[in-house]
Image (cartoon, rainbow, N blue to C red; front, side, top):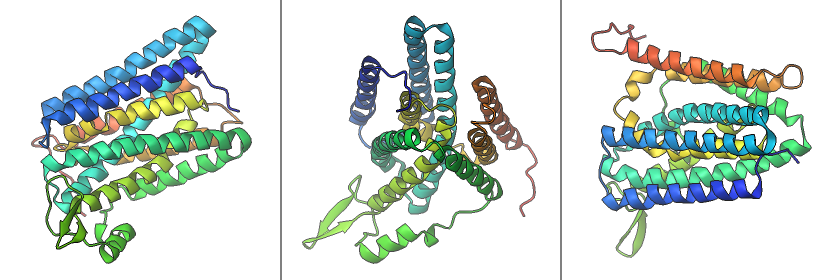
Length: 323
């Protein structure tokens, strides 16, 4: 078994916190009904979710400091924050895919809320299962670390060369299969996924988008989970950093919905991070890159790619010629 800082009390506290957070996100916020979330509200909630993650990390540091000492507490807190930062940055790529899907299918802003809610719940459940399975496999087959590292390295290189490539949704095999085997209406019916017409059940375009987002969750989980295992092998840190990054995904989506075009350099930054993490994982038994250095690299790359994107796309800036 992999060693873990997660005691039964820590797992219980984390589980209770996630349940409360989901109740707030799914019940309290949903009481407002189907309506577009404004930028200011989305920014407020995004900051609140980040603050919640930081408070949890501080509490985790305090708990470990009192039970295992200051050095161990510093290591655990650094691993959590690095993992959270990596997962949060990869979640931005999720947001861009969501934007592409909603735009391609013409989903009204007021109807996007339900899809995002279900997508977040599904992502949490999926990652919990994959992380526990991954931890079990790594505890028995250490060589899988090299497989994960090579996978991240290849994924990062492919992302780097495909950063400017346009996605052709019409060629997506899942979408093709759905159109051939499922009755799909041409119009939306509020937030409903299915409707009855003349005694026959039809599926709405919102259902198709939901399926596509579920598939996207699986694909991104395959990328993000090996990345966090490069930072720490502790299942508790892996799961908590993942879940806290996902909890703010819906607010992040609405915050970035009108700014996506301004972050075109971010994909290059994410690609570099995946390459770096892949190399870190491959070298794990030869040279263990310090967690502080890894955190500095991830933070610096993200900052440069985001600030650079905003600078290039600032009002009045000269855009590079289209190829």
